[in-house]
Image 1 (cartoon, rainbow, N blue to C red):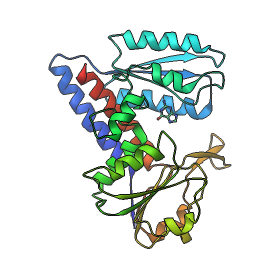
Image 2: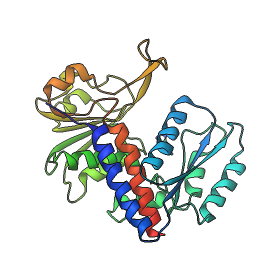
Image 3: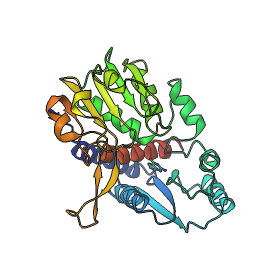
Amino acid sequence: MTLIDGKATAAQIKKEIAAEVEKMVADGHKRPNLAAVLVGHDGGSETYVANKIKSCAECGFESTLIRFEDTVSEKELLDKIAELNADDNIDGFIVQLPLPKHIDEQKIIEAIDYRKDVDGFHPVNVGRMSIGLPCFVSATPSGIMELLRRYEIPTAGKNCVVVGRSNIVGKPVATLMMQKGTDATVTVCHSRTQDIKDICSRADIIIAAMGKPGFITADMVKEGAVVIDVGTTRVPSSETKSGFRLKGDVDFENVAPKCSFITPVPGGVGPMTICSLMRNTLQAAKQR
Ligand code: GUN
């Protein structure tokens, strides 16, 4: 069994990006600038955004953090997005999700100029990705693809089961896995799927992305399978300073011995996600 080290891979990619940025700067270009909009004080969102800002520094980017209280109106948020769309100093920006209930998330996503949508959530980017055109691919799916590439995991003709059908992970990763060049045969399972155990146990590659801690158990996994765990549920823990720890969608302890490759949580897909955001921001800066 090979443990896929997302943390080390991400550190390597950040070094590659930083080297590219220094070359750009030496050639007289400005540093890429990523803005992050954070609404409220959700613990998870705070951590994610702090890590994104930290990664910007590691990659030699500028970053801009814009905060709103969770009482912000949809109009105020839309006005800020219009401002960021027009701001020549900002190459790309993200609005951290989830947003408070009184704000229409889809409306916010669609207000972002797709050329600055480094999250790859805008329907133009989603549509372009689905037909294989150049675009910003959303961070988690592209992080998963990068791990498969860097670990030289064969995908052509393989049976890939994606568990979860979210717009952010399940749907886009299923699309990428079936695309020409990757060539997996993809099945997508979700909360209404029958015989999920049977379907998973025939998979060469399982991508678990439904947000149910420990859902994928050893009896659902074939000997030699590749298991990619996207789950990051915060569960209470007496062993950490923060009082919680991240738990994946895979029962790692019992599943790992059966796998050819597996990602841990934390330290697997998570760190790669931020790298993909950095890569998209660099691409946005180059395109501008
Ligand atoms: N919330 C959870 N993941 C993401 C992400 O990749 N981007 C944004 N904007 N919000 C998120």
